[in-house]
Image (cartoon, rainbow, N blue to C red):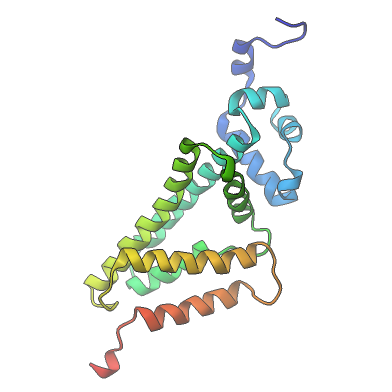
Length: 209
């Protein structure tokens, strides 16, 4: 063992909980953006060397993916709570859209999501599968919500899976524009566009019944 090296057992014993590292990484992205997140800086925040962080995560790509998974898990809890609350399906669909769309330019979750997907061009099959699991959770909840609206007569009959895929593509396209700070469109603009689209595409017109 090289002089000054920390034994593996000692490194494990002294390491902060994994979640503390992920929380610190997300907080750094929120405060300083991805350019402010370095392994050395993160290590200082949690009391570890950059070498120890690399030992536990293997690479910065893996750290970012695990941070995204942690953030998505928290969002998943919030999403399921929103979708299970009382109210019409239409109201809950609006809540889903509101949760999906970024708050503003440089929204930390969307910033991280875009970076992970950009890096995924060189990712292996396991990493791509994990990214797919994140997308799949959003899609399954949306499809179930649309299917419930159809069964209750709030939405017109259509294929929930196909419509869900198209709606998420619309949400992604709009959301990326806000997340990267393109001028001319804001969060409320997106919510208005999507609300109009959902009314035209889904809502049953009871005035002609």
